Amino acid sequence: MTHANNKSPCDPYESVLGRLAGSPAPPKKRRGGETVALVIPPSPQLPTPGREFLITGPFEGFTAVATVIKKLGYNLKIVDTRAPGRDKIDAVLEEIAGADIVGIAAYCDSFVFLENATAAIKRAFPGKLIFLGGPLISSLPEIILKNTSADCALLGEAELTLLELLETVFERKQRDLSAIRGLALKTGDAVKITAPRPQIQDLDNLPFPDYTIWPNYESIVKNGQIIISSTRGCPCACTFCFKTIPALRLKSLERFEREVAYLKETTKFDYAWLNDLTFNVKVPRAMKVCDILFKHGVKYHCFARVTNITEAFALKLKATGCRGIWFGIESYDQKVLDLSRKNITIAAINSAIRAAAGAGLESRGLFIVGLPGETGESLKRMFDYIRKGDFIPLVKYLVPFPGTALYADAVNSGKITDTPQFLRALSKRRVGDHDDAITNLTDMDEDLLRDYFHKIWELTREKAEG
Image (cartoon, rainbow, N blue to C red; front, side, top):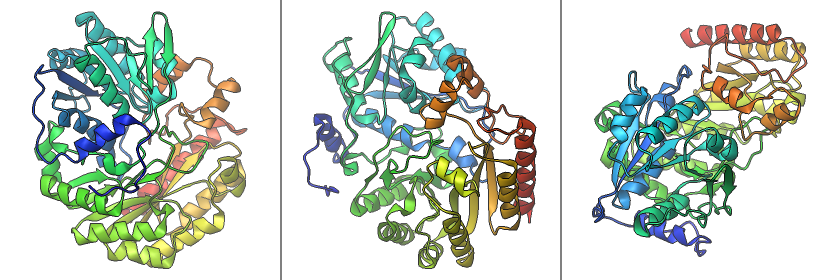
């Protein structure tokens, strides 16, 4: 197996992960026949127009974790509660009844489900170990564990910690998890955070994602699109960004191409959402990723920063099958962008949109109403720019998600006084809902924020239809 670097892994479990990545044959079932159930919570979100698949389709991170469990040889049970009628707790209990251990994904809108589901599981199956994983628990481990009936949580990047957890519970037959790094666990009435786990050093050690783990695998194949990434992490530090895997790492191009070929064979996909958070952070490499997708007949969408978007790069995207590019613009006021630590300029925004339009790419600009420093004048400037711009806008209200700098500011300033209640409100939040709750971190009246939000959504509808 070709690796992106030749360094020895700083975590011994990365070598274990690497051996799974290099295993060509299906794993043999474990002698004990242990079963691990993984649960995806329901979501109240209204899918953002053009991004429905990203909410309703197979999640990439969840697929990666499930793939590791399957490749280890454990029985795997996936419980996807996002489909209508599948979110009832009784149905979840029925599906996880035969599992020895239960993992539940924890996203920003999952708190109420986590409260209810973990309590019900413990009542019905007191001996089952329940672990959580995902961005919400990684951001607020003490609060989430104290307010749910889960036993422990994988913090940050999950694969290596998961390997040690399963080895400890199933191979060593131990329930003392305190020596496992990268874990939060209940100890009586307290929560212990163990020593931090290093992130995966070499992404080539990751197994190829196995989409057959999904109960609706046949519909995934029929749909013909998947989410794929060539990187993990992000080097940026935006104040509003809900990010729990910080360090940017790159798959080798050879490994990425093998993954594309494997997924083409196993899912027959011909369309991909390129899930790199900052796809164009290294432009020469990004162009080679484009060539790989084109070589394998894959059309794609990508997400990009407005920096480094040259005419040549935009033309490369278009020539290699890129159907659209999504830019995180957020605001059209330099002061607001600087306060948000976006590290971009108005000139870069204008240049990127112009280059994308000139190449014939469909551009979408992502905006946030309610960033600190925003004023009536700056919102009007944003609205006027969107109205004239050659792109389709998508707007949302600012939400100070746990784990962000703005969340800490909201707590310190008294805008958020009851974190569990705030998390319950997030569990009802519907992106795109004009009457969604607002945590107002500006000096403006809330009615003015709502007025501009409504106006921009009207522009979105007009541009999408036109």
